[in-house]
Amino acid sequence: MAEKLLAEFSPVSTAEWEAAIAKDLKGADYEKKLVWRTPEGLAVRPYYRAEDIAALDWIDAAPGEFPYVRAARADGGWHIRETIEAADPAEANRAACAAVAAGAEEIAFGQAAIGNVSDLALLFAHLDEIPIHIANTDEPLLRLLIEFLDQHPRAATVSTSFDPLGNVEFAAEILASAPSNFVPFTIGGAARDEASANAVEEIGVALAAGADFLAAMDERNIKIDHTASALEFSFAIGTNYFVEIARLRAFRMLWARVVESFGGSLANARARIAAHTALRDEAAGDLDTNILRATTEAMAAIAGSADSISVAPFDARSRQPDEASRRLARNTQLLLKHEAHFARVADPGGGSYCLETMTGSIASAAWKAMQGIEAAGGYRKVHAVENRNQELGAKG
Figure 1 (cartoon, rainbow, N blue to C red):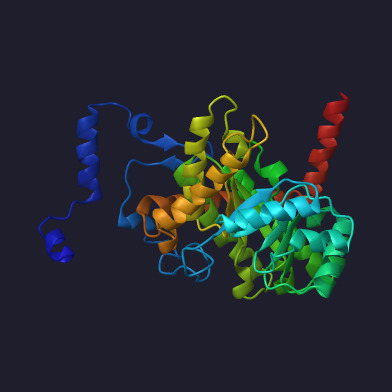
Figure 2: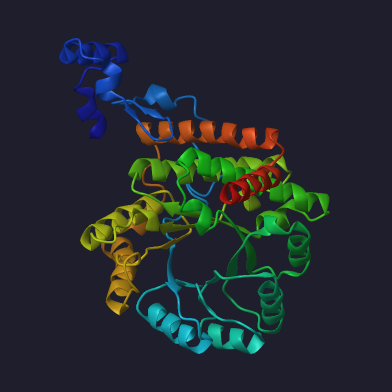
């Protein structure tokens, strides 16, 4: 039926489209009037056609297939992650259990005070089937988590926000003893991805950091597959809707290429992505608009196929969120998943001429950014220089 309908229309060439546009512009500057230039330097044209994506090598890959542009999995689901800020382990556990009962599918403990295995037992009680992320992690806590998980095997994954590049020797020690369902490291933590870097710069830095870590562990005779499966990547999702979708798609493809280049298996080249709505975009005095911003940011994360998504309460920047604002943040995702049926389709933008072209443009620019960091000595060296410069600037 659709083929017959389309057959009624004569094909229109790109040259004919351009001629019609030039006529309507009546001498006005095409670039200034119709081309959108993003902060990343991308030039987004007013329309795209099949010819624009003909050379892209991932177009025929399905969701869940290498290089994972279209998602790391074949389905459209994701985990609704909720952050619990209570410090007391028992209190944090009660809040987590209540959140799960109300629809949360993954829990992040942001401020839990953990001093021993007993504290972890209190914190994890009744959550064996729920993935858990520990945000405030240091070296002693990582060792404690491994001890606890050895004594109390869990069905669900435990992950942490620990940056492995701060101490690669320690990271190698952790990898040597980490159980299979433990994801001990995160690249792209809140401090970096809430900063002012644009989408291209952020991906380039994350790729460089990840490649540096793979290389460091490879030098210590740790298998690439083991290293890659121990990493989570964290991204703050901003308000630039289509760029945010394309950014996650581009990153997933580039990370798959990085892991492949190190000799990792295709299965372990899947990037594990945790996305959260950007606090930097919240306005302290415009709470209602924050709800709308968070909703569209969550939609972008879903369309970009993030594995877990956290929506910040609309009042997170202005006051301590209460139960009502936390519930609304949780319900934003529940509505998107169960009422708007966003989970029914993997990679809903797949095949879009504009989105696929944007994905390719971001990927190309981010790869060059990563190569620039590598040419300067790699992520750790560049990061150390930046830190020294900041310290000197603060003293000066």
